[in-house]
Length: 422
Ligand SMILES: [Zn+2]
Image (cartoon, rainbow, N blue to C red; front, side, top):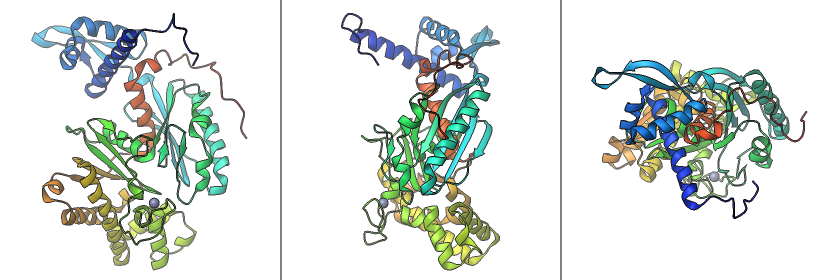
């Protein structure tokens, strides 16, 4: 951005007025997002703003193409009034999930409805560069084919350092650390790119598309190729100074335990990530041919066997549930959320896993806190992380609407990134 000369730079009061206007526009969008159609009078009442202010704000949102009038609705005192609604069908969002060996790219509408989902070829540590090129090709193709795509959300393994655009550690796949996600994907993109740590993206998906929760305090506990946590407190993500807060996977559950690449020992991730479960499956010979499977495949077979009643499989799933439960104990004590949602590969563990998690929490957490914490498996129709990547983009759209004003239909002919890839 060019520095502004003193003569043209806005005064502090102008800046804060602009911030307040954008914040009010955001409040209106969130209200419509949550409640569907509403009249200006209803929005004014809900947000505590004057009818005149709402008229001005909604006029701007209508002229920007973000919302539209829907025709007459029943107003208060049986007066007819004009409804307003988000232009839901005009906006699509790409979600990209980077999960070490798995990359998924989906297109979603504003309500989280899935339009398409693509699994890219499995990634090995020495093929990260090829995976990045494949992601660029996929995004380019999707953008070219769908004018309504207005933003891209990316969910990357944590700890993700948001200032530098890099992940600080990706256990077992160090080459992902070489990728500067901001430079690689955000710079030169024709639409805004929002990058979020994977579990935090999952938390955003739970907030947007999961069961409504009045308290605004929610933890999304990712049990996948890594172990992660996203916490929403008072409606906002807990980020930390570098964006590396809530790294539950590197909380030790055994100070004399298994060493971890992060420098700690006994990290939770060493006991209940998909890779750690896969090791146990191989060692116990629970799944025929497991050694040549991906972590995800091996875990899926294990959970299927457990579901069928195979006692060996059940015993391992219960053990994984106990370890996952130790993580929940820390979540309860550190954040006291009203709800913990377990997602990703671990969510396929079913009741055997969930019962073991709940039993561990009941045993080890102060009863008043344990009793007030609802623990469940993610019930989102699509994997919460790829949906979460889109949720990160949708959240940005609702939080900063003017960043997206005029994008629909005006996206063609924008500059593309610096170098072609092969
Ligand atoms: Zn660690």
